[in-house]
Image (tube, protein in one colour):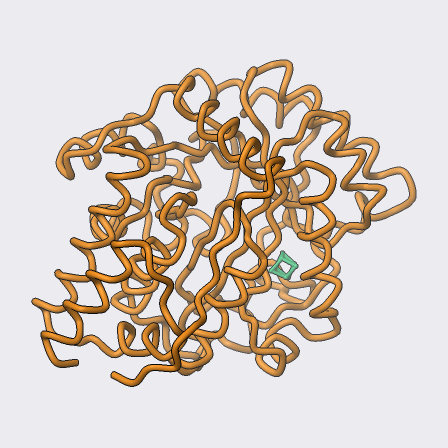
Length: 370
Ligand code: SF4
């Protein structure tokens, strides 16, 4: 892209203009180092305006690795014989949450595959009980990622104290969705996030990078995220998983993930955007933060036999996914962990905006070329 063109796009977006999908494609086409650095610097300036140098820290508990689905990219897909399977008990999960809270995280993320045991008749009551126990034991907000659930279950989880519902499309290209999430319904997965919002839950949407999507597909997915108006948006790089049909597929280009993080920051200036430890562990954290992320996710307590999602064991038992291990990286980047009060304030402010109807920011407008 010509330098003056990039400068003009960045200036306008920093001044609050919306980007067209074509302009997003232009930003994704950047390859030169100076241009990439200009994009990341703009993303950092936008982050600083909204969350200063504060970074939120999320503790992660993958409570069950059983799943009824067969997503092509996932290590825990139903038919993967190589997959590590476990289902943690109520008490084990509460204890792990307590350890995470003690270590200084701001939120407990309870994630599971679509475990048939929970999806049986009364399973979600046990999950709701768990959310209530984790809230009580830690005093922290809880994010719940149970997969695709109906309104009754979402209401029950909200009632039990959950603040967030996370559920990723991975792509808003319907044909790619059908390919990578066989047998799953695109619209139901989308609607469940809208329903969660109407019930007063904050929502997270996510995309997977490196599945063969074009820049136009990425731009469309980012535009759809804007329309969905979720409170946290994430991108994760595809990592080939042993025992899956995509085990020989090339891994995602890390540079693409970083550009998408930066573009997300420009498109959604006041939202939460995670730098996940789940892809490469501590490696790559600095770069993700430098691209504009303001949350570190997937902090896992060591020694509890818990797994990650994209990297089932990386950095967990050697305690490199802990608050203590990310702290020096934050300092090196001129950043600092937020306080619990700051995280609560972010949630309250966001809820007030939602209740007042003053949220929403979607890419769109001028169809403009590079
Ligand atoms: S991505 Fe989620 S729903 Fe799909 S197979 Fe993995 S755990 Fe199951």
